[in-house]
Image 1 (cartoon, rainbow, N blue to C red):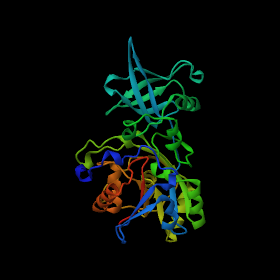
Image 2: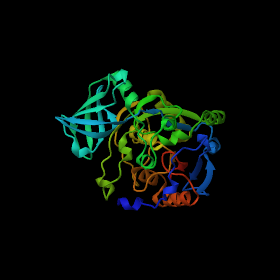
Image 3: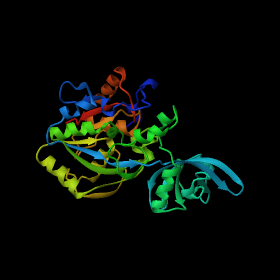
Image 4: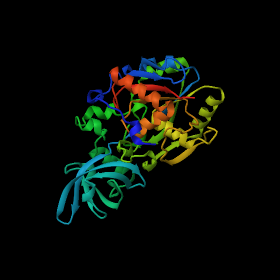
Amino acid sequence: MRVDLFDFELPDERIALRPASPRDSARLLTVDPDTPPELADRSVGDLADLLDPGDVLVFNDTKVIPAQLEGIRIRDESIVPVSVTLHMRTGASVWKAFARPGKRIKPGDRLQFGHAGNACLLGALDATIMEKGEAGEVTLGFDLSGPALDEAIDAVGHIPLPPYIASKRPEDPQDRADYQTIYAREEGAVAAPTAGLHFTPELFEKLDKKGIERRFVTLHVGAGTFLPMKADDTSDHLMHYETGHIDQATADALNAARARGNRIVSVGTTSLRLLESAADDDGRLQAWSGNTNIFITPGYRFKVVDRLMTNFHLPRSTLFMLVSAFCGLDMMRAAYSHAIKSGYRFYSYGDASLLTRKN
């Protein structure tokens, strides 16, 4: 499909630079292509009223790490500043990353992050460029490994705010709390599963009282989620891999919910992509662990997920393509037009939508 079919105009003032406070006070646009009214304005705090007892919310419990590293490239007598965003761990001391400026580095270069006076790092965190790929992607071999490397990254790294926020203001200490779900526990993401940012203990309590189940899966969101679509046709776009897993108890619970006629409600596109990657053709789940680069565009047949809670996405993005596959392109164009005219806040810190899959 042509990528320009997924374009739309978004005024700058619709981009949220801070989350709603409290988190569950964010607005929620319900979108149901098959049941009038197709669009309705609600609040995230109303979520329990929109679901049935026995429905299952599926959350991504990945935890964002401070994966933005600022440092220098050292080659012979030459030293230049570099910025690196880690996006996928492939070994105890090895990460794939996006580096800027990518053209000024090559395999064998030494990178140094951190600064003197940081006792736990003995002055710096060092790495070597092992490989160089396309679009600024590199493979980094760090001098530290395992938990020691994790501690060093936590000490010198920064939260990798999305470019549409980072271009308007710097990261600050509040982002370490704001850009993390309250249930995050599996470290490894470099971007938050942002639909989950809306949940609070009070909202969980409402959902519990209604008899709505909560289940957790893990997909470590990579920095590839920030990359713009450069292709003119979706068939030419390369999705980056992300790592995830589902345990057997969770798979059994979701299979049981579907068998009794309840709905599977994915909190975020990351949970949805993982569930759809793990399901067989009949929509049945088993324990699953691995990498996925699933790319969902209109025409995809969904196997597991009935409803999707998600934020509002960028024009021409893979995520706007996904929601268009879920509800239909015309429906989502109408929903986004309504959201823009009605003052909804967009992107990672913005408002949310609750989508019902088009039959």
